[in-house]
Length: 283
Image (tube, rainbow, N blue to C red):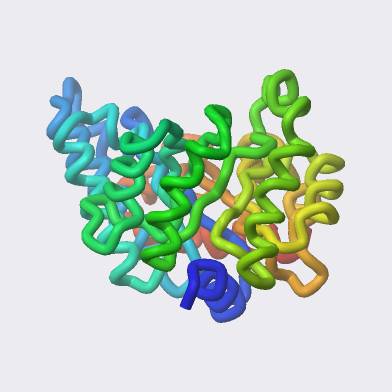
């Protein structure tokens, strides 16, 4: 099955379009309070445990998880080893892994980034990868080549959720969205190229959904960044497919320190994911 087919099947099977982000913020990890001056390897181990706890809690509840590479990279080699463990565990549990790395480069460098995440023997195995297109279409093509050869996908940054995104993205959004959807239309109902479209831009998301019928959206900005469930769900097609809506902090961290969270992170996160699912369904 292609990535788009596997994604559709996973959303239908789990009966939700929620994707849970795995963002191991060092200061908020379960068990961090017990360490007065933790070393980088100690923090990397906490990040690994946290990531695996999210995987355990998410299994059977959502179709996909989205590890944020930067938080693992900040913890050095041990952090990258933790990332590899989390990616492997998530895929073994039947979850789709959306690697949030926002890679973007030319030629052989782009291919190397893709091989690291999307190839059959990738050290950081993902089902899809976020990529930046702003060096030009020729920088997306090496990623696309590796992705298609391995039935994986890409999510291209199109209209991101941050407040300053309009300044540089608005002038190119029409051309870029047309290019993405045209590439997909050549390959079937949905193609391997998705688009990152933030929930914080409701009107833009509505317009892009209408203009991009062959494209899956990855929708950040729901919850902690201010996007409501109703804002996020305008990215869906009428059949309920077409978008993965991301919750990271809201689904995995308490708003205030919680002894229950440190004592049983899997149980706490599982309950919070269930509540986030319900919130999204009701929105």
